[in-house]
Length: 370
Image 1 (cartoon, rainbow, N blue to C red):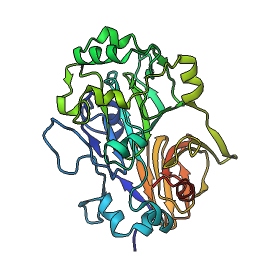
Image 2: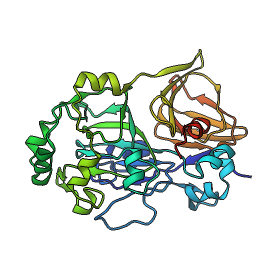
Image 3: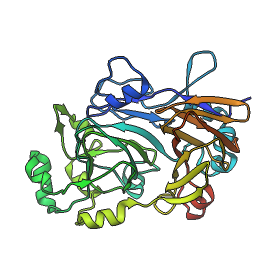
């Protein structure tokens, strides 16, 4: 019989920027440090794209313990029994794609300025079912950090100027296109496809996105990390990048009003509070919630796969007679077949969880997104 709850091991993945010190610390590694693996791809069935680097087999794909101490790809486990893990309705509409890519991300420096395709562009030009709309939930910042993001062009260039600046890597000119937008722990931000953006340095966050690794980089070097030519424009040129980008001006006040997401409370009692952070108001293929458990409680769930990241506290998560001890940084996968989760915090501190699940199948089907 398949398990109803899985403890997920770390799945650190190479990226084109340094970071990961806080992830090393959470994982209990000796001599924690920043490296080229600043992201943990949680329950990922999406392979990582790292053009220009030496290939690593199955990079980006999450694993489970097979019960005998050997890792097995989560993707293979799901494909072997998709109804158990994803539910019959999901499989009949979406197949075995989860509908999301979930990450823990710890940046030591500001990321390269980049942009991702919309779903429409990805389907028309990149032979991909999904684009890469993404959302950030800010968890913490490194001491002394002024946490900021870049989001959209506050001072958009003409296309001729864009081509010149990107080709010549005129960074003072590129920097002038943006104004810094301060962010704080607890906030959730939406980054639609087509919007140029960058995450500032020193930010630990949960990142939720459409299940793809499609990125165009407008900035080719930061902190000595050089993006190889084949990884800059998805194998195309700068004009291809321009077709993908929204050049509309986005004043900071409008960015905050439109893309800083307000949570919606769906439960508040002595034992537990639960807020929806991201749902079908903004994206149809995944949903994200924050759960704060103050006392032993049952958390109902529907017939969707659920992944929890523990962001504070410690305790136990249990489905029927299967228990998993958890602490800050733990990741747990709960198949669709489970109907509820028992959560028990340890000590006097609440157990705080970020949960991600596929979007509503009925909604996706009615909107004909697949």
